Amino acid sequence: MTPTRTIKHKELAAERLDRLRAILRETTVVRVDELCAALEVSPATVRRDLEELERRGEARRVHGGAVAVKKKRYEEPVFDDKAAIAPGQKERIALRALELIGARETIYLDGGSTVLALARLLRDRTGLTVVTNSLRAASELAGSGPQLILIGGELRRLSQTMVGPLTRFMLEELHIDRAFMGTIGISLEEGMTTTDAGEAYTKELVMQRAREVVLLADSGKVGVVTFARAGKLTEVGTLVTDGELPEEYETYCAENGVSVVVA
Image (cartoon, rainbow, N blue to C red; front, side):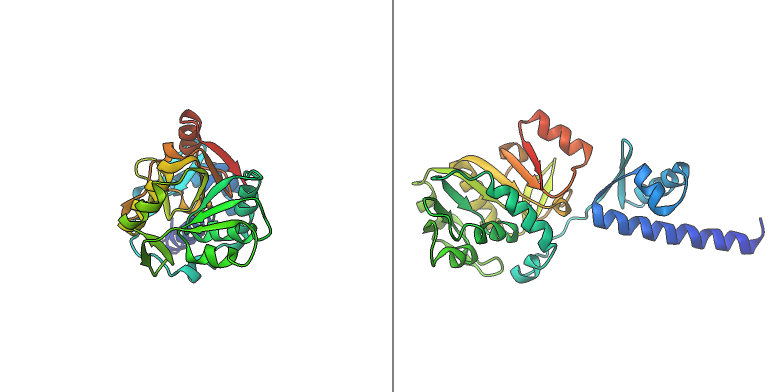
């Protein structure tokens, strides 16, 4: 092989790896046959590329495909920036979550941007009681609709939520039928995680008070681990997401009684 051909081959491989990274960022989990079609290469080439990304710590191979490896992240975007990320996915998840709410339930709405999308769908729902620590959700529901109970505590400005030990005084007196929770990250090892210890404290307390926990999380949260653990995945009754989970997550959920609803 001539030097020119060797350089060209390396350039093509590098371009292909960049395209493969972009696909993994977009979909989180991919199949080998899908990558063959997208990259127009053979399964053997795809497997070699996945081996290279796995060696670099950017992907993890699973049966039939690969999963993007999410790095630990400790910086949380401001709420309006979070709400602007994948709004269509949040709306689809919220619509599926809406189907789970009975006529006269007492529900809890957490402070996540996907949960806020659900709050907007409840403006005309009378007969419900909504408990929330989210100032944004409370603002959406203050004019009409459900009976509203706002949890007091320390204001976390970044998420516009009331968090910390003071929230216990109210939450310990309440019985919640269904708690709709958000998260920054989900992993099999660490469960749900967030960037603030006070927020994690309140999330765990809510889940203890709820008859069922419904986690609303887009597929981009899978594999992400942040600063503070906010509950185990086994505490979740239903996970509403926007796409197929990696095989190991599907197996884990099935074995631990977590229903998965794909929006």
